[in-house]
Image 1 (tube, rainbow, N blue to C red):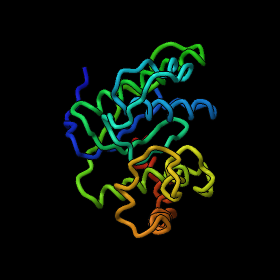
Image 2: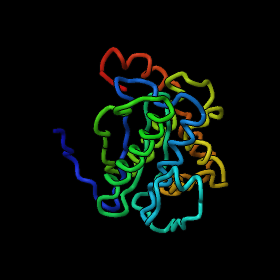
Image 3: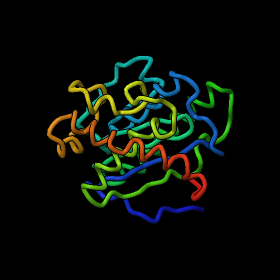
Image 4: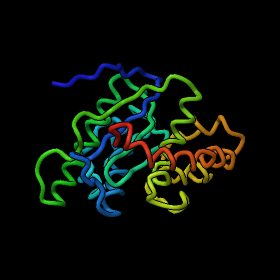
Length: 215
């Protein structure tokens, strides 16, 4: 049985990612993307509440947004995989968060598509962020995914990531984006930081399948 070798420590940052079983598509339409996003923001909060499907129907249950078990800094959803950058707040928070929201999405996906069994490729992957420099570069890597994978020619037209939230003063999503934006004088500087590596990222994307077994 697989086990995790890196510990999850309160106050530390982690890159969490996984893909569809056998690299299959896990997001087929806008409804799937929206449901996945709803799930991970819903289950980042730990307080007595029903499963997400029941909450969506009634919305009468109180949600104490101060009782987070993780902070979500940024994210990107791709057709067959996802990336999250999070900080653990409560002991065991990441494990609980990932278990609950991926289970929720699996049940939704299987019901919608009349399918049984796992949706994701085994245990999710996790990499600990060790420096501030690694933190901001990782956020750039996550946000560049749709562009370097040639899903879009302009990141401004990709909906299923937190990139727009970083450039917008309005809180489109309840992100802890200030943990990254504090290193930049203004959002436009962050945009420039991301786009500075766009062409390099595209080149790497074209050759990486020749050198590593990646997503």
